[in-house]
Image (cartoon, rainbow over all chains, first blue to last red; front, side):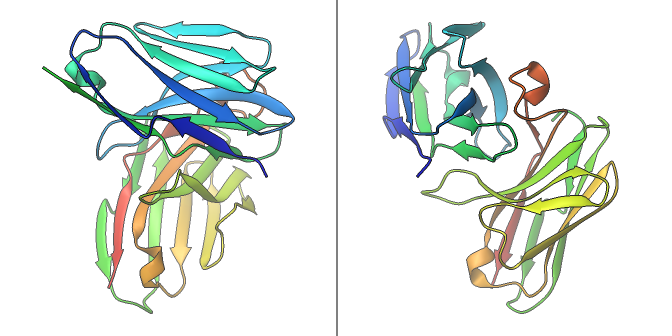
Length: 112
Length: 117
């Protein structure tokens, strides 16, 4: 069964600290992997999208990595800000024409 | 929200009544999607459209129907609402799907919170 598992489920960090969120998937064959940020009460917003041939992609303070061999991805947030408090969702697309598989998300809380 | 509006934004209805949610886009994207989001679950695809009058089912399509008569509008109908359909519904759009290119990116609307009593 195609699945996307994220860890941790929730995380609390101090402002200015770094953190890393994990995503493991069993989707095969694999087309691309996305990370989304969802603020409370709003729709998800895309942070990065990577194909199987890409190892890393950055978007400002967000850096996503992908290891297609081990089927793992991570999202690293540098110098966290209060505005980073949100749910971060890992999404995997299998071969073209199939549906996106969404993880349940990691809830990040950044405190001052 | 990338030129996507959803209406209504909030709705309370009673079991057994029909409900229609509307998604409107100004981006002229080919693909449109309806998702529901519930606590303890990831976003789940209800239906999607790959063109005018071209739609297909997602993983949780039972009890829902959709229509797309124009590129910019995608309607989601609950023929007879049930309490299990209480959820937050998101519409999304994309230019492409499965290419790995930036055009694959889905843009989400602000959501509709539906409560079925």
